[in-house]
Length: 136
Image (tube, rainbow, N blue to C red):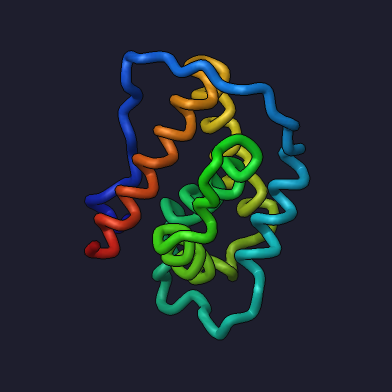
């Protein structure tokens, strides 16, 4: 988020125990992510305004759909991250996939190391960072 801001969240030491859930294929999630970013809404990259932190946040929100009770995509932070992600629509699909897969892997690592509950709390932190950046 700009050169001086990034979307981050520090893990709490507390480990959460998550429920078993049906796993979402990372390839399915990438397809959803690419479809959302590519939708033509009239928002296009202008003068290099692409901020990859919003692409990462949008990808994490997409991946969290399979594990968290909240639908982060259907929230003010989700809409804002998606709108900002569309400013990156001129990035090559290969790079978009790479960014999405790295964000999915980060979510999955938190989930595997700390449990589903902690992973969803981590996403809550990303959501708060996006809203803070937006000014709410």
